[in-house]
Image (cartoon, rainbow, N blue to C red):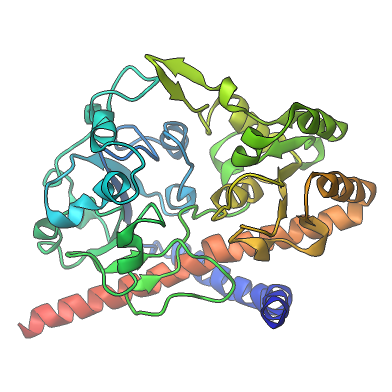
Length: 395
């Protein structure tokens, strides 16, 4: 109870003040052309994020994603360049294998197959992959890897670059181990956390969400969705797969309902293909729905909720099993499906209440998923490079 009151206090008072200072600093750096030059890198066996050649626009890059939207604001606000690199055998570049060996998601060969063929597409990721020694790393100030994509034997040759990485799957052993020390050849660990109270406890750790996004980022990439035209409900992915037809039909009271079920996925060569998240019906629903709702399904880390708020939806969710319940207030927290209907009716009946909740969630996402992590990454970059170059000069 005390912790909840503290979070509420931070949300209501501290964040708006910090938001202003953080935004002002980024604006000042942008005007001076002093924002860091950033590359995003993934391996050719990674079954998430973008699948395209380097040098494309933010829209083309984002539209190519295999699954999630990811750190979109790196593409839009930092003009980050994206690369797929061929997977190297070095030990530190083997984090991806934990999904097969430790987590038992699928055989290792399933992930490796993405090099040659992506389900539903006519090519594999090797079509766009380059060698780690072919990328002009010194063109960048920060390189952000999804897992560790660039081996230490390469990173050590570029001391003026800050090497940062996510461990994409938060259940993987390397995700936990990286809080104690960074992977070999890496400088900064991006934890994926973004709660009001920082969780980073070591100098090399930066609380930095996988969905590094802010409200309006999707309008920036795609055609804007006008606020007055928002209608209907986007049902969270896992909830949609457990929902009954009667529940989905009942949500039609609030307008169009987007709730893809497993049977809606396409089949290609015996493999089920999830509907593309940044194309077609899913993207249209994200940009035009008024609400994003969750009342069942498995526990979540909150990436889909952040994406929905950044796209303009108001998120209504259960608190149980939700790592981002701090984004909810009593007006947007539900206990089950009946409560979803009750809360949506209340929000529909009071424009002032709806606008208050929308403003609150957007302010939190802007600060926790963009402004604060952007500034923290810049601080970590500057400190890392100063330290490395200082050690090099002494040596």
